[in-house]
Image (tube, rainbow, N blue to C red; front, side, top):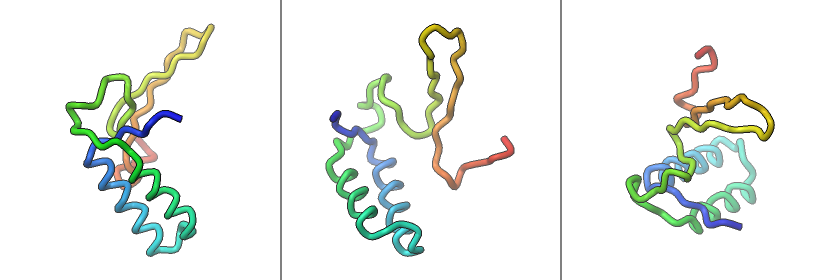
Length: 86
């Protein structure tokens, strides 16, 4: 499995969300521990060190399907910035 690459800001935000989920009991202890361990095993980089082929938060991603001409775009963002209407 490929090593997880994260910029330091994404690492801190994800860690915060896991802690909040634990405090609200919206995630099981074992699941939270597994996620925290995954984060701890990640390679932390400065944002400018992340290569352009690595998907990060606040990024627009185009997905291509073989044999199809369409390329839908998705923007990845944290849930508190979500706007279902937009």
